[in-house]
Structures are given as structure tokens and as C-alpha cells.
Length: 89
Image: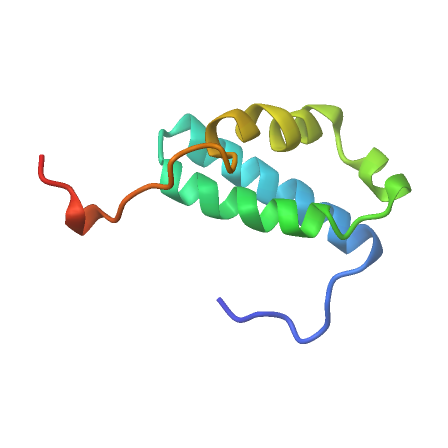
């Protein structure tokens, strides 16, 4: 997927953050943790660029999932996943 030339701002940025959180949640529900981790990181990066007023426009359910619930499973205190090639099952 090609990256846009101009960075997102305003309403488009808020929509993109919501979209990425929803995609991460769908991966979470499908037990696809690697994809969920990647989407969550992208959503969190964009979320951190928002102003306080813009963050209030994100639905609370999405904010809670992004900032708290997923932190429990994907936070820095967790062991990083190993590559699929190194697993000997």
C-alpha cells in the first residue's frame, strides 16, 4: 500500500486512528496477535499526534481498548514474540 504524500490532519487523522484501532481489534478477536500488535502500534503512533480535543472525539470504547486493555497484552513489560522460523513445536 502506498503511503500518502501529505500527512493526515484534522478529521481525516481522527478517522484513520479510529479505523486502525478497529482493525487491530478485529485482529485481536481473530487471535492474530502479530497483526494486532502491528496495527495497534500504528494506531498508537497516530493517536499520540492528536491534540487533547481531538482525542476526545475518538469513541471512548476505542480509546480504552487502545490505551489500557491492549497494553496488558502488548506492553513493554511483555516478552517480545519470537519469529515463526525459530519455533520448534
